Length: 557
Image 1: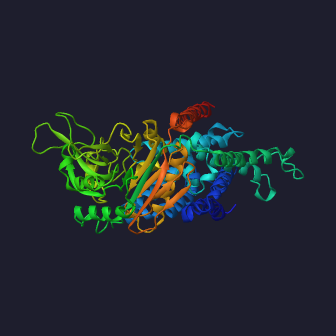
Image 2 (image 1 turned 180 degrees about the vertical axis):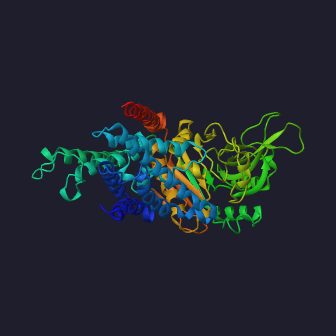
Image 3 (image 1 turned 90 degrees about the horizontal axis):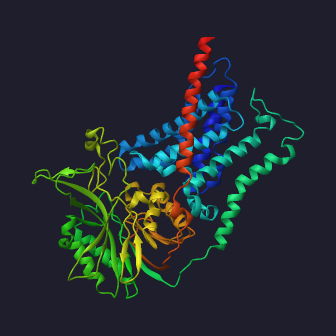
């Protein structure tokens, strides 16, 4: 086949993946067939290379441009904050292509034809696991996220989480590919298939199996959707969500802290009464920096506390930047030398606060953001390359490596028997971390974020949609407060119950049930990542070992 045609076939995978995500995953089901062209191209290269027509890295080259199209079309908006960030789609496309190349290398050297396609699933899940846990964490495009707009199709995420969705997507692509590749016009030269043209799908077994793989999870999800009922709904929380709509490139860091507080209070006032339990404000909305042991001296915090005391039980949840002193001699990855003290270090942090109502003995519960944005709040591989700290991207506020908490701290209000978890911004993309808030007692979740950096692009829309998946995974109501972008409420089924307009000052209010049951996913987390990743590593090691043995045999002969 002409290599240009082969390139176009491979590129069609990128087109299908991009269409699946366009207009906030409007055509998400296309992801179930998007890998088929790449699978066909890999099979063609594997079975038509006797004359060394293709190089050893042909699979990487053909898949790279497909993945590059996918990454650029879905995450181009990253460059709005910093032009340097344009390298991220290129880097991510490279990683995805490496996965496909490793899959090709493994199947070629093991000569394992029948089940070779399963290797792709193991290697891809290993890749997505790495995306969640290494210093360059960017799980935005993990495949299971694709169905964030269609929560009624993925209710079973409450058991298997997003990674279960990734396995389903890959398995659907593989089974459908195995089905259609027997069609004569799609047949691959030199691919040995036992095909009876009169009965392409012998006894309809392949067709039935493909339908089961694709449709069974959807049928199960629909059943869970209609059968789901809230439990322990006798207790509710009345929540006011604030979207102050501060332009992060202009007014957010130029307005005085008192002006920001006034805007929050002005937006909240029409919705306030004695029934309100919480007023939720976005990430970094308190514009005063302070040492954490001196928060009671912060004017913005005191103003919000006095405002809440006008009502019977209201408390404020708000984000800010802080600094905390470490014990003498303690040094962390994020610590900085304190100028006035010998052997004394401190950390800068991105925190959420639960501002208590007590004016006589004021205090705040504090949670430190722990899943940090690479290149902004966490400098990758700083331990090995200290100089990277100077390269931090400035998105406003504190930059460079930040201090974190060792666990997802939930805020507990004893007087109201409400426990809230407050994932901050990027943390809401990581379902395995968000579940820790629920494990630690949270019966409602508040996502606080600042999505104004990306302008009117798909970025803030994706981020908003991801909260639907967190709601399903943990069966919790979620209130989401964004500085700008979309703020809103989600049900435990992932339904969007209420949403603010984009780029408007807005406050919304809703009473939501407080739920205490824990899902299978909440209790046990992602049970797929570790075993699949372990198997992938074993397969790769075995492949390398087998390749070395085969080379020695050929040399000896």
